[in-house]
Length: 250
Ligand code: PEP
Image (cartoon, rainbow, N blue to C red; front, side, top):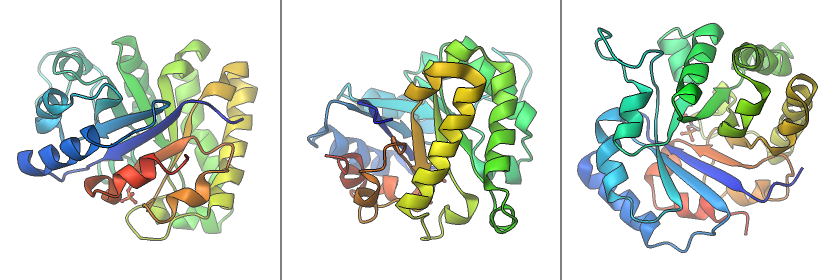
């Protein structure tokens, strides 16, 4: 499937300052970005409102990197989807491997978060992907299916219009060793087939992003891959080359 709407998201992780975020947003605001590309900037939570206020170009949206499963209350340190919305952000990254591994988030907890965020009107960037050991054991697709299946059980098929899937092999994140574009295409295609068998035709329009050491240099290699519908970018989203990634499909 070649989709006409692409999606590229910047995951700043726990990096940034008011000054550095201003530079990034101004750089994007002044760039000539294609209108069929959706761009989502995901700064650390304290900068969500600041980022949304700086963002003058409609093509860019703002997203959080996590949220909780309650609207409000005694949940010290957690972030409500309503708060995310209130400060001008529309998206949230959920299931990032750093949260699954460092913060022990289970497939079920991630799925609960996805369902709750969607219910509150926040769109979701859902991260899935295998570790190096799982890859070596030939379990890549099994892991992706397991992570997706928890979400499939928790949301209606129609909800997938507001979910972007980011395939992020853990061994490629922050290592400089991106998957090859063909390997990404192969697994993306298998992910789409699995989704189609579970949720039906709507799977054809779910954007499936590649994430893991994507940069300005390797992004163009993915441009002809029909099931790679954009990138989730960590390190390079903090640099001016993020613009080259966003425009790499032209
Ligand atoms: C990420 O963590 O979402 C990511 C893709 O990181 P990087 O681009 O730095 O590998």
